[in-house]
Image (tube, rainbow, N blue to C red; front, side, top):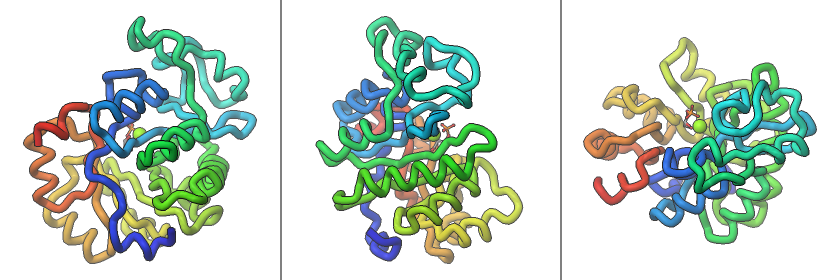
Length: 249
Ligand code: G3P
Ligand code: MG
């Protein structure tokens, strides 16, 4: 699908953050299964590159919070990462859950028609290599799919590398604040969307985005009143930890 084809926004409004928010160990297959069971049809995930070039899911730059391992992931090869328990930290129920490769998640999504937002989350100083590898992997994995994954990142260098590697995959700039020059960067990256920290979103931002041809998505929206406010403004993606929120709004 080309960028132009995104004139018709193909993605659902509701997006499960890291799979199923905090209800299951984030970014594991168990989380995506739970999110799917809760009615979510699109998911956000955080993707890094192992030291030997395997794209896999992990939010933090270290293993401590969400795995049985410890220390930086920067020099860890996949064979080592796959040994970690990525579920026991959450609850006994999920002990033994392991880290997930992007190709495994792609297969799971394609089997059931789930949509994906891949947040490229590089380890510091690996922005370009991660952007390139994740984009090439996504392009190959979703080659036959009717709707490609949406690539997003806080890191312009990661998105720039993704743009060069796989220009037809849709890109979104993640914004936790409006830093100087962000609009020019989003234009240079030919982004189709902005994914904004939800308090940043108001009528002025929506007008600005519309003038530039950017859709607006939001994270992390866990409150029904805030979800309604964003929907009224015309926000087209609500990334949430709250697995029941789509039934309450
Ligand atoms: O992609 C939206 C959101 O996930 C960005 O923040 O820290 O949860 O990855 P974070
Ligand atoms: Mg994320």
